[in-house]
Length: 162
Image (cartoon, rainbow, N blue to C red; front, side, top):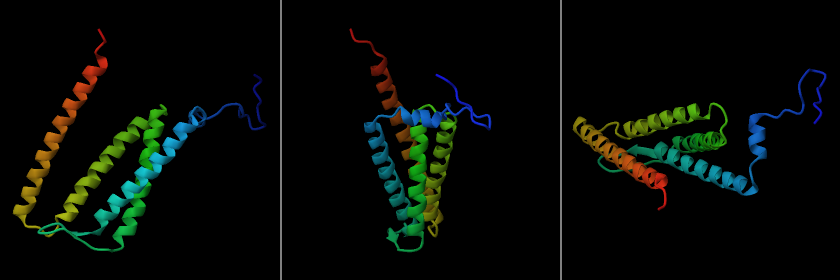
């Protein structure tokens, strides 16, 4: 194939890695990507809007419509859309995607902790300690359970048929 060079010295036959990755996607994968992007954006938006509507958690959960709801929905939807783009790019092996996924994990962890802290404002010190102990216990058990499930799946995936 002949390489055509433009007057500016750029090779017009070269394509970016992102464009090359997009060209290798089947129509089924593109449809899945669209459905997943919309679903994740909506779910992140709904969760962020719910967090934005929390007035208080203890002694009962109280929600209130405020400016935090539409702002939370907009920010959450945008975050969900960007997160799925990052995951999709990592799946295609684009450079820098793994690092972005780690950053997304940190950001989402901080958001989760912040939403818990925001909901507990105005609670007594004893109640906050109880919530912290319960949250830490749940995190430990879910981490151990996730690791065990991962180990079992990895074991069965690596086992050769006899």
